[in-house]
Image (tube, rainbow over all chains, first blue to last red; front, top):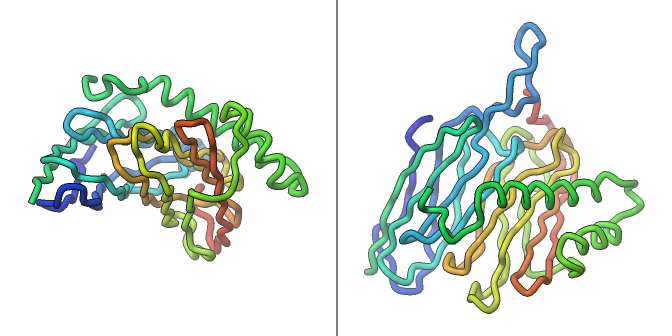
Length: 106
Length: 155
């Protein structure tokens, strides 16, 4: 899997709601498409996306083939302390990739 | 996976999410005339008796999507996200897709706010339903009707 990208603000005030943008390039093969010979292409998608903040899971998403190509997931979170976000994308077949980003209190 | 400690296991998430999404999808598959009342009854079974009511959850999607391959969707829930009063999960289903499940988002109160934006595939013009489950067992439902010009699931 490609290395995902995360965008967070470098700093935030205590209690501030910040927007976190994530992008991973992935074909999200739905299992509905056929190849040139008419055979179904097997499903291969990102089926789960998990976000931990300072080691505590805050968002755990189960994703289905209805998610578009190159999953672009944007969410908001409240910053109460210096926060390290760790995010993991899980692919059908068991592979996963993780990325992290930090927001410091201003 | 250490980062999942103290949280629902992958299996629990997938099973719980799949069951919820499947049930929500099933209630969408009935006759159109069955409408929101049947949806409420079926969702009530999933939510331990709570009847999902309109309010608190907002599902924002375009009224017309020219390209069904990538349709923006934003979900917000009005909640203080405290340990005493928070959203535990949001389930999204789209009845007009080959598989109606779209996503199941589970939250812990530490996130502080429920505001999630993703891009989804839509095979045809259809309604999308999002249900928020609260920690007190109550549930809230929102619908969006999206007219799709070119479907995006099998292309």
